[in-house]
Every structure is written in C-alpha cells, then in structure tokens.
Image (spheres, rainbow, N blue to C red):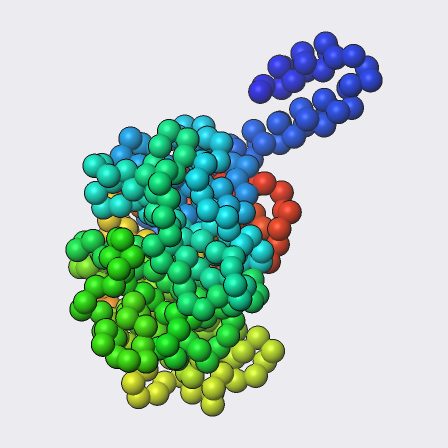
Length: 396
Ligand SMILES: [Ca+2]
C-alpha cells in the first residue's frame, strides 16, 4: 500500500473508525518499510539483501521446491509455501501436533531426493507424548495445500520433560540415507550413553528403518540408529562438496562447536568441552580433550548459538567457493567461514547491520544465499512480533 492509498483510505473513513484504521495503516506502512531491500559491503564486494517474505513467526527451516517455490517452517507448528516473490500460503494441513514450548516446535524441512517423482517431504519437530517431548521425523506427500498420508518415521527415545535442546536438522546423503541431529534435551550425561537418542546424530533410511552398516548395529546395549554421540544441541548439519558431513552445535558458555561428523565417533559432551557451564562451573573436569573423543574443528568464544549450516556451492559468488555459512542466533550474525585443509582460516561476520537473530541459511538452486531471521529476542521467547524474514543475498 502506498502512502497515497493510505491517505485516500483514511479520508474516506468515518470518524469513529479512524483510530483503528490509522493504526492498521501505520502497521502496513511500517511493514513496507522493513521490507525494503538494502545493500551491505562484504569482502566479496557489495551485496544486495532482498526481503522475500516478512511477518513470519520464528521460521526454522527452508527447502527449495523444483518449481521455484519454497517450503518454510515456523516453530509454532506451521509449514508454508512461499513463492519467489514472497507470497505466503496459509499453513499446510496435515502437519502433526508439535510441542510448541521454549525451543520446541516445528524444526527442519527437507525434500526427498526423489521428490520429483514421489512428492515426499520430511519434517523434524518436537513431539509431545508420554514422558514429555522428543524430536521426531515425519514424512508426507506434498499436496496443493496439505501434507498427505503423513507417517512418523522416527522418534527420539526417550521423551523427556522440558523445552530445551531438541536439535532438529535433517540432511540426506547422496546415497539416500537421512541424518537427523538430536539434542540431549538438557540432560547432560545421557549424551554419552548409547542406549538412548539424547545428544546423538542418527542415520536412518527414508522409511525410518536402520541401515545395516550403522556403527552400533549388533551392539546389545546400543540403539542401532546412532551414527555419532556426545552432542549437546546440534542445529546445523550439512555435507561439504566432497561428501563429508559437518555439524554445528550449541555448546556451553564459550564453547559452540563446528565438527566433522564421522561414523561411530564420540564428540565429547559433557565430558570435554571448550568453555564453562552457564552457572559458571567447569564442564567435566575442565578438560578440552580426552583420548577417544573428538575435538571440534572450530569453536566460538563468545558463543554465537549456531543454527543452520550451508556450504557455498553456487556460481553467483565465485569469491565464496570454499566458504561455509553459519547462522548465529545469540550472535545476531551470519558467519562466513573460509575452510582450507579442514581448518577454518578466516571468519567474516555478515548481516550484523540487521541486528537480528539468524536461524537458517541455505544456498538456493540459483546460487543466491537465503537466510531466515528470527525476531525473537531469545530462544525462549514466544509472543514476539511476527517480524521474522526470509532474505535473499545476491551480488549487487
Ligand atoms: Ca564436543
């Protein structure tokens, strides 16, 4: 709505309705202001930051449909289709009930590798049930305005009380196996126990069955879906162009991590970690390394609360080859890391001008970088204004 249209609308309005409509008009004008595109200067030159959609509520995950549209999740439990010009559908029907408290709700969304023929979409979410809630994965066929024939293919075991540390990222390997990141639900030591799914990365077939070559298949005490363990709250999961799996997780104070995920390995939580516990006490005996436990490739101190992870694989930004993007919630930053020989050799903070939390980052099929902001002031906030955005970054 242009300011002239707003003016005309107000002029035609009966006096007693003026206040309400003026407030509505002001809101529309302010929304059109926040939707304006902007440019920022980066080491890759000036880039354009375009607001594709705004007014989202705690968006969490993003997937690109083959017809240029996108699927976006909102944590309270909504899955929407967004067109490339920003038109948002209503919430799709068929999404299971989610435990929408604290960090809980609807998380990531992924298309089946054979989506073009089977229309299957996978969602991760916190599922309420006996014992509290746990991360689950469901899949259904994408219809016009619904997910149809939805089935739950995976449930984190056991469900735990409390609203924290669900993980919730999904990624398919090129061989079709599905990886799911699972938080330790703020339980600490169970992350080291292979008889549960707390603080694990699991590997399953698309129908939820367990691949026979998983590392703990046949171990009596271990759950066979486990691929790696000793994680805290992993919210970033992505394959690099060489086919290796990388992960980010929320660590303790001073210890957010970037890890390379390898079959059967132990990533240390809560025995070894960088940083200290939030009350100010050491983690374990205060060590950062121990035999048999993997150290992170990189860690953040102060923490950024990483969420979303994407290797730059497009052609729009040749300068960003060998870069990986990491969203930062607490850090209110999109981090670009340059990787060489599995080491982080530089870190560039991007989008700090926006002063907003970043929940997810993806590289689109067009080579642009897409970012979901989260306008909540903290991971625990609900009822914050619906001001989160889907942004698109392209060279200016
Ligand atoms: Ca670790």
